[in-house]
Length: 364
Image (cartoon, rainbow, N blue to C red):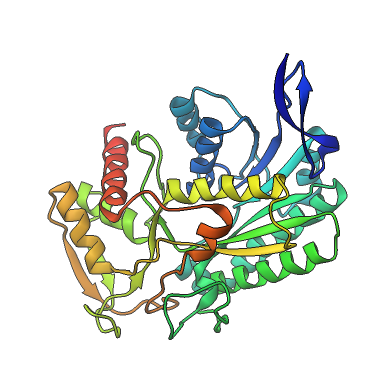
C-alpha cells in the first residue's frame, strides 16, 4: 500500500493517508493554447500529477499548439474550443468535469497598441470572460483561482523597482485598464465568498521559448512584442524592426522593461496554485510581481540577441508608440518569500531559446 496526497471533498484540505489509488486533481487552464498558457501546461505535465482541462477559442492562437505540447510531453490533454464570454458554453465545461479544483485564467487579448485602436474589443473580451469564469467558479464551488495580471497595471512610475504596494497610476492603455479592473473584480469577488482564495500574478515581460525549441510565442499577425519582432526580422519574415522611440529619459533613450523567461513564469503558476491547494496562504487575495528585478532597455535586448545568434539585426528608430510606459521593472522579494520563486534563466538564455524556436518555425 502506497501513501498518496489527496484533496478531500474537492475542498481546500490536503489529507495525507493510505490509499490504493492515486487521486488526480483537475486544473482548468483558460487561454490554454496561448503563449504562457501552453508553457504552463507543459510544466504542469512534466512536474505534477495534475490533470489539465484546456480551453481556448483560438482567437490569437492555433490548435497546432496542442500537438506541440504532446510532442514535448508525450501526453494528450482534454480540450474545449469555447469563447469564455459565453456563459452557457463555459458552464458546460464544469458540468462535464465536476471535480475541477482550481482555475488558472490566462485568456485575454494582450496587445497594447491594438487595445488603443480597439478599446471596446478589449473591454468586452478581457473583463467579460473573467466575469464568466468567476460566475462559474461560484456556481460550481471551485475554491482556487490564479489570475493572469500584468505589470502594465502600474502605469508610469517614478520610483523603481515597483513593489506590490506601489500605488497604481493611470492606465496607459485599455489593455492595462482591463488588468487593473480585472484585479479589482477578482478582489471584490473573492472577499465576498468565504471559501475561495485567489492569487493575481503581475508578470513583467515574458519572453523566450521551451528549451526544446518546439514551443514558443506565435503571433498570428505582425507581432506587437519586441522579441518575436526581433526573431522574425532576423529570420527574414519581416524586413526591419522598428524601435519605438529613443528619446525617453533612460540611459540609451529606449524603453526599459523587466524580461523574464516564459518557463519561469509558467513555474510560478504551479507554485502559486500549490500554495493555495496546501492552504499555505492566509490572505484571501494575494498579489505578486513576477519579474527578474532587472531593467533592460530595448537596445540592450537587441545586442543580447545579436550576441547569442550571430545575426546582425536590421532595425530603425521610429516615433514613440501610444500606450508605452517609459520604464518599469520589479521588486521580486514577495515572489521569493511567498512562492519560493527564483527565475532561473538570464537574458542570453531567453534570446537563445527564442531564436531556436524561430528557426524551428522556419524549418516546418
